[in-house]
Image (cartoon, rainbow, N blue to C red):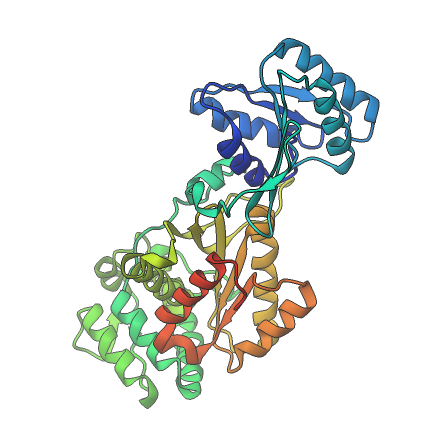
Length: 406
């Protein structure tokens, strides 16, 4: 197997093509050595220790020499080459060597996983080449498997539970109203942040200073239902609530986590709740794993991979970003970040969604698709989608899973 810079396509191809008693050989360059090592660790955990074949990716003679050396150790056994990963130079010379190895009684198999169609292109011996049926659902890694393939250490474990779901639902409802959006942002800035942030205004205050604070409930008329639900959720009959008590009742480990939730993370929890309902009630969506808060520890030599919500549909990752922002420019930046992270993490098969508060999400989606040549890979949901978000997102999974474009 030729190893590329992203381990997921290699993982999928190996899972599909490696026989139960087969031996996996990882053909890699110095550049992809760490990717090969991550793949090897995964297979070793499943009692399959791969062999390494290191080549100079820009030297055809070196590529041929090292693969020929590995073939001598294989002997007369059946050999297959998957060239989904690796450089074009590696693919050209590796396929030549493998073809030269073929004998009438010992046919070889060449294969390539097409990211656009999710089909495997296969050549076996002298038989006509063919394409398989779509294989998207034949391999179903979890989000944690994807994380392991990239050797990430997470800042926190991936969240699997919604907090304050009733309040999140009420907030999503009132955010259909532009006046309510402004009123909630004003309350967050002038009441919540003003009392809970340090003088620098970019970080939450220390826990011992926050625990005795009382925060006034919203008073704007457009937020009446929100204030009532906050009173219920935080068990207060007054016009304010104590942060420490509200934190305990909400199930947060720290007060700052409640503050973050109120300041905008409520939307992530609302969307996660929607996705959980889709998985439970809409099996045709074919999603099998959902995780929230995928935030690896920062490493100086690795790209940023933070993802608000991850969804697995077969071996395709959906990276969903959430923001309460109404500014199309800021939403476009948020979507761009999610798109890059998703592609780095899960390759060309990845899809990206943005849940935001813009009035015309279809315009933003059209701009992104045209600019990035990302037809069928990007979906934007706006504030008017909130009441029917379950059906809108389920339709997205169904259309994309069938290989159609929304």
